[in-house]
Image (cartoon, rainbow, N blue to C red; front, side, top):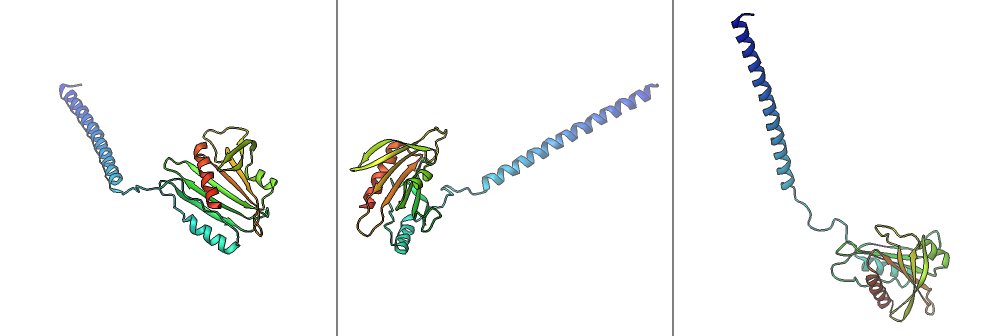
Length: 203
């Protein structure tokens, strides 16, 4: 092979290397441009600063349920201003025959408190409401005896009905007996405080 041919071969190799390097640089620049556009879009899109969970006007729902059913539906006060209701419903004619009212609350640290109020409830209904729980003792709250129900198997994270307080309120003349089930993932102290709020609403 002549010196001229070797020189041409060397030039060709250098040209190939330059083209390969340019292609690599172009890919890197394109990738950086794409990442830049993604960052701009991410920063430009507004994000909500409040919870996306809808807040429910549970007191209005309770008032409507009481007016329609003629039953003393209870609407306890919120534990603090930082709590809100995320669900409220009244079931007048369920398949189990026990009319009931349910309201749930969410706290500032995503704690949860729930109340189920059953009218003319029976032991079978209570057991079905607290599946997996068994009565383990009693607690006196504001002069009312509450039965403590706890899960036989502890969950991690805790489930909403791993710990519950159940109280039966004797029926007043012309009114059905009521059973209150207070439950949630909040602390036991918060559950007991909420039970007090329920009794205040009853009275």
